[in-house]
Image 1 (cartoon, rainbow, N blue to C red):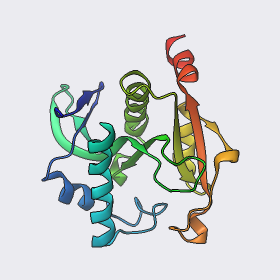
Image 2: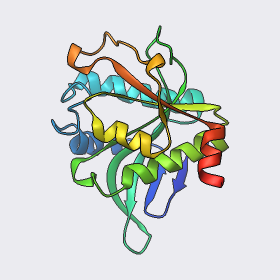
Image 3: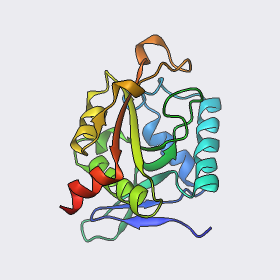
Image 4: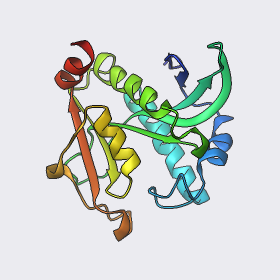
Length: 192
C-alpha cells in the first residue's frame, strides 16, 4: 500500500511515521484536549490507540491521519496539528458498529482557526469519493459543544436513534451522541 497523502489549501493529511507518535502525544495528551476523551492517556491507552489507528489503515486503507499545517507560502511547515480522518466505529454491540466515522483531535493552540473544519471536509470528500462510503457518522458527547457544533456545520444530522452507552467511559462521558450524513446529502451540499 503506497503512502497516503492528501492536501487542502492549508493542510496535509498523511499516513503516520514512527517519529510522529511521540510528537502527537506531546501536543494532544493534555487535560484540555483530552477533556472529552477520558482524560490524559496512560502509556497503555496510548499503545492501544496506536494499534487501532494502524489497524484501520491496514484493514480499510484509511485511518485518522496525521494533520500538518502548510506554511504561509503553501509549503509543508512540518507543524503537526493533530489528526483527522476516517476510521470504523469500533464499539461492538452498538447501532453504529463498523460504520465509517469521521473524527479529529487538534492541539489546543490550533483550535478556532478552521483547521478541523477544513480537514473534516477533505476527509468527508475522501469517504464518499475515494472510499465509496454510503454514509458517515461522527461521535462525541453532549458536553462537547465545539465538536458537535462542527458536525452540524458540516451538514451532519443529529441521530438520537443511534446514540449509545459505552461501558468504556464513565457516566459523565455517556451517552455517545451520533451525527450522520449520507453520500447524497454531502453531494447536494457540496456540488449543488
